[in-house]
Image 1 (cartoon, helix red, strand yellow):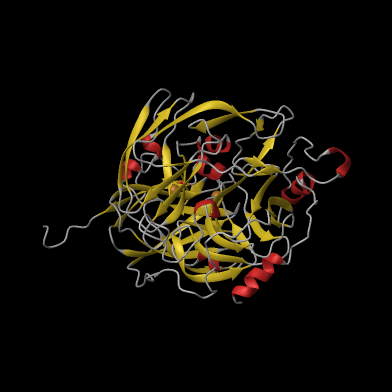
Image 2: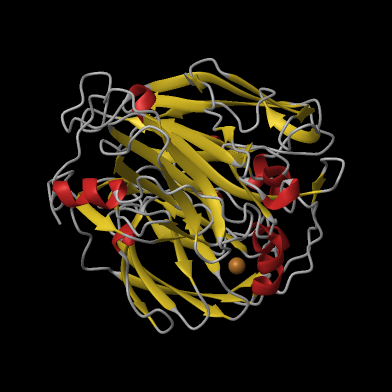
Amino acid sequence: MDRRDFVRTVAAAGGTVAVAGLVAACTEEAWHGHAMTGPDLAPAGGGAVTRYPLRIPQPVDPGGLSLQAAPGTVGIIPGKSTPAWMYHGQFPAPTIVAQNGVRYTGVRFENSLAQESIIHWHGLLVESVNDGHPQQAVGPGSSYSYTLNVAQRATLNWYHPHPHMKTGEQVYRGLAGAFIVRDSVDTGFDGNPLGLPAGSYEIPLIIRDASFASRGNFQFSNKSSGFWGNTPLVNGTFAPYLGVNKGVYRFRMLNGCNARVLRLALNNGGAFALIGNDGGLLDQVRPVTEIIAAPGERFDILLDFSALNSGATVMLRDLDARWDILEFRGTGGASGTGSLPTPGGFLSTIVPLSAPVTTRRFTFDGMTRINGKVYDINAVEFTVPFEATERWTFVTNGNGPHPVHVHGAHFQVVSRTGGRGRLYDWERGWKDTVLVNDGESVDVLIRFTAHEGLYIMHCHQLAHEDAGMMANFEVVRMATEAET
Ligand code: C2O
Ligand code: CU
Ligand code: CU
């Protein structure tokens, strides 16, 4: 596929006017067998769907940032107001933008909720005391100070609460935001060597589901089988559209659902130019027509709208729920400055991990246990030598999907056997979350090179996590002969 093919695949939708079911709540109930009640959000008369401009969360610098978590109300469903829990009074929270190599001090979490909480920076490789371990949760009226020493590849991360047994509800009610790290390879302060789309051509898309009662309140249940909402939101926007100029856009996508795995595709079958994932840029650009996105996973894609005429549309869909998620609507406006790298074109150097010295096996059992044990917040289940390469095997014992997430290091996925029996392009490079479906066994190579200390691994189906599918481990520096 060459550059022109990318252009064509997107442009092929020109003229398509998407009027398909906006909220496929009924098909969704059938698909999951979850009895979800929700409002009838389809407009009367079955006419064209009314769409609303996509919200773009405000970008903020982390230095001296004070993030207060507090209850408030937000307008999501037109004409209604929704009680939510928010950082900074925003839904979703502001997009934190940091630079590799900078040590940000005075980052504060203030808890104005009626329950304990703590912020975890999913994907950031920070010291244990700054990681938001559940042991660090603070009560109502208290605060926690962080120093974020950003020393890692450029990537899209995610910040959200991590108190023991309460993460699912707090994330669901609105406490979550994007956290972008930049570096000199990827649109850093000192340049943009790859010519990636930037400014208003680089857009975070936090995709999540929710259910609403007729008054507009969130519906939620905490049962460990997980919560599936009946309505997709992007950046907290109901039925969103984004006006796109004739140019190349970069979308930083994140599955922020509590439990739902999304199968993302364009309505015209066009390809995404996949350039990155959890751990930043891939080695090269790859076209993919579908992305299976588990909670916590990130996807960095480019789309070229240079042939999309004014008023023409392309729809981002979830093929499993049969949802229209986000409409791209041509403005006919002039092009941006970003360009589309040639498929196969070089993006970044990924040095493969090899020669693991230890193999560990983790079974994800039922909805509450890892290796047969429910999470004990005070126990250290295993220790990992600093800088040793290890092979970790994740196995499911039912009740999947289990999106497995590790704090403190990124890993490389090396194999998946059983189930889908293959790896996907978005699982190349560096990851911190990998999807394990029932019947599957997934091997990753992992090496902790950032910090020693206490970290956790867990299932990112948040109801599983809250019910105990989580384990503490400690990264320890082994004494060398010179030190003893
Ligand atoms: Cu996104 Cu341990 O979390
Ligand atoms: Cu994390
Ligand atoms: Cu799970």
